[in-house]
Image (tube, rainbow, N blue to C red):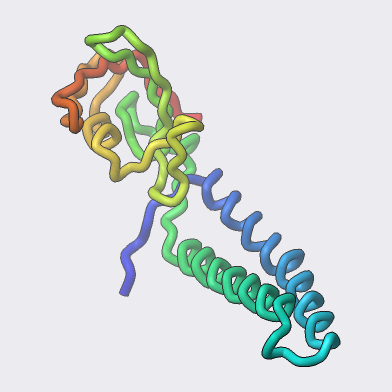
Length: 159
């Protein structure tokens, strides 16, 4: 039995959008491509048919994957949390690197939502684990491959 996996409300919405696109746009397009390729005759040497079947396999696998994730998701709406200023799952945190003075903004999200380029870090990442439970003004120490880094928490937002 799988345990619940945390997912933000936004992350769940994106997964549902992808699921709907796959089911109601991609799946019919692929089925049509398979039917068209079948009409060309011999399937053994029909590259269009094999490509369409491969696309179908990928799409169906992704559909099952998303359905599984959504069924095991614990969807958390951070705007309804009362965390008393503490860093929790779903919070957006403004940080400053104590050594370089560089500022960062990260939102702590589920593993499947993480995208460092968009400032979304996994709740399982070392920096998120170091931040959780702290509040504005605290210093969080992160054990990184290059050594320990210290970040001051400038702000914690629940948006």
